[in-house]
Image 1 (tube, rainbow, N blue to C red):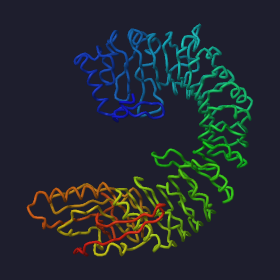
Image 2: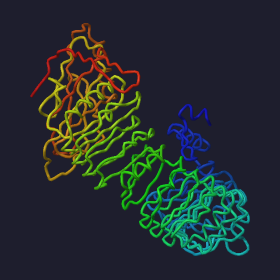
Image 3: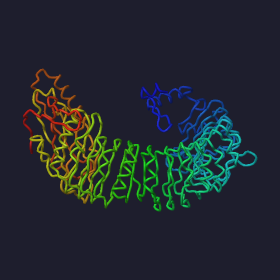
Length: 624
């Protein structure tokens, strides 16, 4: 496994293994070659049309081991019988699903075929809305590892003498989300290997029966009538629990104190428990606490002091906030004073993402925010009363201060201070109309020039109407700019790009699409544009270093140079900026500023400041 990971052939995420597309296609082709003309004689089936033919004709009795059946592409009824899958004596994997809808009706006549399945089945999942209250699955399932009956609407799993779990001692995962089951037999305790249990949106009346599952690691019981008495019984027994979901349990008013005994608990989801009023001492192992929309919750901030591993915290918010998928942690907090916020910052040193979006009363941030050494993302968007930003940690990769209309000052180190090889960095001061733009431009220039040398992607946005003076003649009063490079451009490192958004948009558009920019080298090399990653409103400036585009330009220049006998060949670069196809918005000004490797910078021993010696060749620019 590790060798495959080292070669980037597989990726493991949250306990799941994903393979490279090429490896997957190779595997599929190997299976196809088991029998090109007769799919029923292959070990695995995934093509809907081939599955339809095999099932309709009762084939694959001795060969088929796995079926993944997406029913969206089948518009003809199958009308399976109870013997269809039972005759497939080698089948181990069966998944029937729809990618278009969460709950499928049984218009294809599949449910009858699920009543009898081979004893060798190990993985079984279906999201069929079973047209009966009892799913009469007549198989022993001694080897069954995972059973998923999500939204199947059944009330009873097995009927008669064959109770659920009696013959499923190998079961590790059970998903009954959205079913009408009211009772689970105590014999579920025989599932000694059960690690994951999903009972969300069921009608279970007695959750205490779950106390026998001492090895359970993940339990989801959202939207249940549950109280602290039930939970107390469970917490005394489920000592291996790592993840607990109690979302939308509106009868829950408090958590029992014995939750602190769950020494392995890392994730606690309480979102939507609107009557929850009290949080006791939580286990120090906790890494994630989601109390979103727990509007009645009150707590003492001392509860976080012993949670040194906590890096995801959501409290008191009416609208969920979703950070970029690349971010691992998030935090959204409303209605706390600056002193209480400072206490939280001291208690949560592992915090990576902090959102204070649209906190209307926020005027400042506590200075100890600089001690959050893992902080990657900070949003103060829409904090209209925020007047200043203190020194922020060098680890910060994205700062969103859009629409902070009272913001005047930003610590000088906030933009310029950074470590090497940080990849991407974004600072958005869009519509910060009272900001000290001179200081922002100065720090942005230092950061962007350094970014070109270190091949990092940096974006800085702020209010303005002109390309910075730094660009000199390398700017134009429209959406394109021509640069005539000097004959000896061997030391060209890259470019800093600039685009100025007009003061008003047509058709009453409030936010512009992303800005795209690309280049043409003479008339022979045309390249696809790169996006700015940020949406704009009128009267703002974009500055960006893009290492991919810069490297592409330098490579094309070197290729053209090698194809000519003399080094005096004119290199004319045309840069084009726009808002994409279909947009009526025009760029007001633009520029592309060349950075050369002969320029250098010195960083002091602490890495806190940078001084640049910039001596650019004097080249003839183009100004419209």
